[in-house]
Amino acid sequence: MTQNELSLGMIFLAAVLVAAGVAADTLVLKDEAYVRGPNVLLGEVAQIEGELAPVLANVDLGLAALPGDSKRLHAALVEARIRNAGIDVDSLEVGGASSVRATTLYLEITREMVVGSLREFIETEMPWDPADTLIDIVPAALDFRVPDGEVIFDWRPNPQYGYLGPGVFRGEVIVDGQTQKRFTLKANVESYGDVLVAAADIPRGAPISASQVEVRKRSLAKVESGAFRDPADLAGYVARTTIFPGQEITKRNVQPRILVKRNQLVAVEMQSGGLRLQTQARALTAGAAGDVILCANLNSRAEFQGIVRADGVVVVP
Image 1 (cartoon, one colour):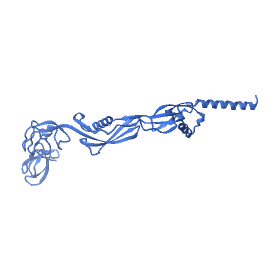
Image 2 (cartoon, rainbow, N blue to C red):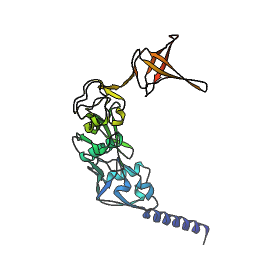
Image 3 (spheres, one colour):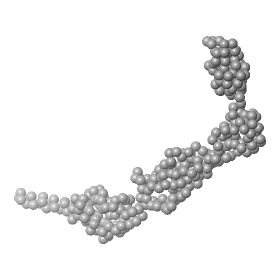
Image 4 (tube, helix red, strand yellow):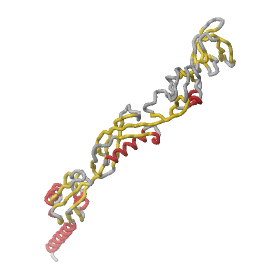
């Protein structure tokens, strides 16, 4: 075999190998396909085989239809997109349908789903017991569709909202990290808790005992500020005004019992080094337990301050 014959044989063999390689890359367009969006990829609407399959599968055919809707892609458009990607269409075996109907996958977000998500958020964030709380949510106007993927609801209340009474919540539906829908919902939170009320008339100035009060469930949104909830917290208090049956016990209608009256002689204790000294003084101001009052030395009339102890003794720090 001459050198020329050998060269011609190599060229012929190379041509056969190239032809064999081209024949291995096939593309069959489907009649119908479901796509994720937001763009349609060739691999979603066609069956592809061969060495170029990974490259062909990622060829962008343009925007997908809205979630749940369809658009038709014709074979001519598919071939044009392949050429734009720098691939020789003539080297492929193209077959299948003359066009493909590409339907975009979607998820249906119902009003019930939105309300359920907000309810769960409120129950997690509020300081009240869900068992004692009523949550009324005005639902979204309509159901809506979002692209298929991982769905997350993100809620933001008004920064000043204390999870009592009416409130406004701004929500977002996020799919695979992308915000798909924004909306605003109104909710009313009605929580109930234990509150102390008078069990009978409590006259003005009378000490308040556990037998004079009872615990009732009340709407926390309507409970007065400073309401008492534990009978033990009323120890040492007297009625500031007459309190009637069923009336809430608050810091507005009670006050600490005055243990030291003005001009009263009081026992005084003070610490000096390791010694504890006791004497008497005259109270220049009245005070209850824990109050700081002004006193005067009986002999020198020098004034000093002390703290009224629960037993009525004035302690000088």
